[in-house]
Image (tube, rainbow over all chains, first blue to last red; front, side, top):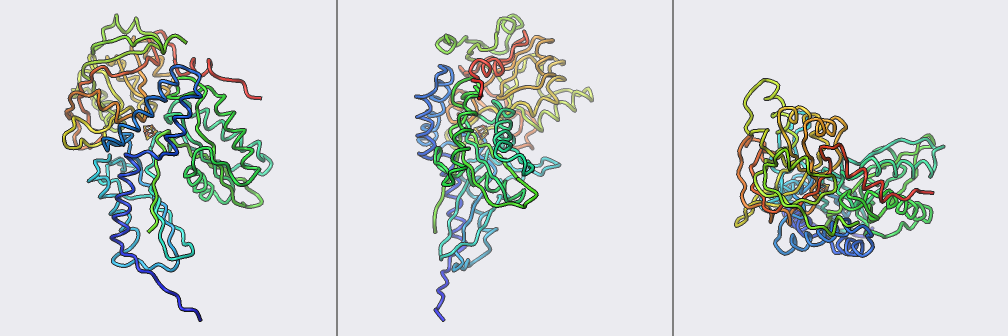
Length: 284
Length: 191
Ligand code: SF4
């Protein structure tokens, strides 16, 4: 039998990594998003829309230089952790390590604590608990993705169990309706993540993962790539525009992910992301 | 589309009834003076205080309410990043506040028909600010202090002194709605 080498990773390393990622994500907008916004400035036909986009780009630069949060809503802490099956975490458990990283990032990085009890609305004071999605993968490494998710755009997201008869037309209609109803609320230009298939919660998770893609990166599935293209055009034809003040650029991208589903169902989730599309990752 | 090219109209807060009646949806403005931040829970508290006939921590007749909750203030700064939050969440409380004298609000996103109706009936105005440019917006704040509901942390009511804060009239006292008209103007009918 081949010998399996187990790699040990100290939970403190996880904490430090999570802390670093959340501070970085909140102050340093990814180059791919900045490029997409800069490109949008050139394409926007509405003078007011163009002005809004220019301010968005300028804001990202100032945030980076001054290490200030890009947006005051520094988000709910969504964390994706891919754990290699040959890893052993020492010195504490994963969940506590991640939450400690979030706690330290939000306290020491001057990030806003935006998490509360759903009923009393009492703030938990340290932006925990994080929303942690773990996946066991091959190998002996841990990949951590930090995604601070703003409430304004999350609130405009939706999921629906369509009937199989609705098909791809039904999917497109639901996505378009969701974006149209959202209007100016989620801080356009937005990015649209769509999850199709699986179960209700799987569709939602796929939609969120779709938002991790580089804006404009097409799906490898030709059927999805075609739907992404049509939806991208139809959403930008809505006229909502940057800041909701009218214009050509309502979304920077539409990204779809899909998995097989039950013969009775067609789950679809639409996760809306504002222009402050923050996510950073590190592999340990 | 000459509007964007126009320079903004400058106003000192609080706005007078005359200033408000001169404002039209789509007007770019530059606001200076005092505003009060208040969002979800603070609105509930203000509303409940009003219902019980209690004194409010701010004078609604002269207050401009800014739907916002800043990030913590880092050392050496006046305020952390700050910008508008989505206004519709305050819609359940807003008509009552307007009835009791509130004239000006700054936020982002569409308002409910009841709010738009109250804005028209009582001669108020709703300004939109751009969401997600909070590092830039923080530079327009000259002073910040907590004045009520400190226990709410980021949601506490703060008095901010803003200087040349850029905004745009979304809902004017005539009943116009810039978000709707702008969207119609730029919409392309899909096949
Ligand atoms: S939706 Fe995004 S950009 Fe708008 S306020 Fe929330 S986090 Fe900021």
